[in-house]
Image (cartoon, rainbow, N blue to C red; front, side, top):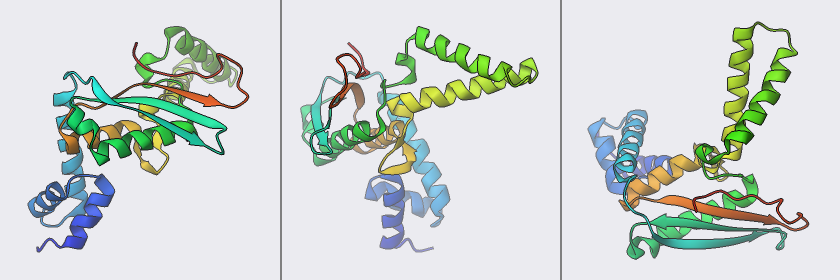
Length: 208
């Protein structure tokens, strides 16, 4: 099957992968879009895993204001070299992350950063709610696990669906960027401010 430019364009729009990678994937799977998407997803994840441990101390701090200056965000996005930090794709990624944080209000970068005390408090709350239903203990346990997982995904930046494309999470967005830019990329920390919030109400995530 002949791979057309329109097919390559469609795959690139859905995956964010490089044009050459899209073309190769389509050729490998005889134009099958779904198989090509799965292949690119696996390839991107593998690339990201290989680069996870590499030092990422370059990057940029992106600032974003929304709704007439009533909401402001600052986010530090890191990569390995200043060359990548200065690329349009990396700058766009940082901008998209700041915009997302403004709209989605995450509290932490990842669920691993959520304090154990917060997790235990929410778990106890969900357990009390589940027990009130009168369901068996094994069912209650599953309900609590499901609610806790949903809660953590809602407050963790990397688990949230991207506001500009809810079919991909922020974590997947970063994975695609790693695959494209060939460097370790991570969000170190962020801060979100909303006019009228009391001091200390805003919470940010990240590493010290």
